[in-house]
Length: 441
Image (tube, rainbow, N blue to C red; front, side):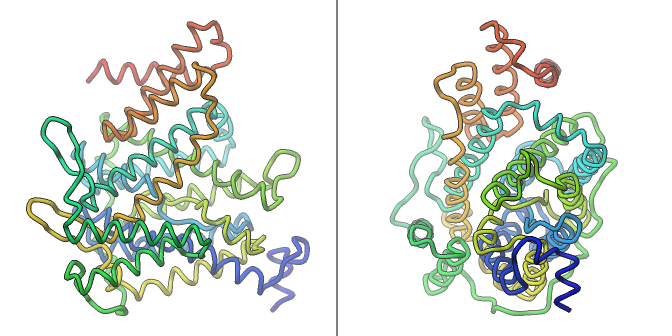
């Protein structure tokens, strides 16, 4: 058995072993498994069945992670992206008013386009066209948006007449529970405890039970039915003109996150050879197919997680680590009562709060803020578009508008400063399309 595994995954060639890959796969799962509980809580706001979303999340993560391991032989685990789920639930279905079925259809189309471009290799041109400053700004802007949603879920910020938002009631039980979750998770991260976010979620939920904020439903049960979301996507509805921008945003967010993750986790592991990741096209195909699978099962964009770096730090070097991560996602199917407790709502006055799920959203927002240090703040033609991208996203609750302001201002400032040749022609095209979108609106 070891010989077969060695040949298939090239264990000896990459100087690793089955034991090391198992440890790496388990470590990766521990650091990213919070999505099992966060995803149903966020997507259920759209009317999707929470149990079905939980099953779709586990299945899509297991299948996509296994596909990446077998097709690309890299320890890049996959699951529904944070940020994309907020765009799906809060913006597309919430602010814009589209049904979750149509939103899933848009994700299916964006994933299919991504797969086609991965097969023919065009994705590299698109990824290279967008300047690093805007890529980093997009990550930071989405992080702030996620944090804002977390603050709202926890009751830390509330609607306040005259100033838009203000501080919540710091004496209320759900707000105090949220603060406890943020403090505990932060301390665990400072102590470098593996699975800090997951442990923080579980501890917050446990404390919420005696406070009568969380209702205990048990821990284990048979998996809920997938039927409420399986193949319920509306592809025809997603083809209407108004969704072109949404498909565009889903696609580019997926592309940027995938490329960023591959580069971010590959460099420390020594995967990069001559400035390039060997077999990256296979990795991109696995990543794009993950999104297609996720939309069919009933969840938002699925892609490679930066948390894979924790497994790599433990020695994971091949796709065998993904096999172990995938198995753990399948085992998680039997924890649906726990997901129901963690994602449950608590009503206080006119506020509907989710204090258990709020802390991980706030913490993920912090993690995505790190990219702000990679922006050249001394070059105004780079800094101002980055700033507009960052500030517009949370202030307007719109990733699309953040992209629009960033692309348009980048093109304008480069042109007026006599540096127009530094801009890829695709950026000018996207800027023109964004301007046309505003005119038509």
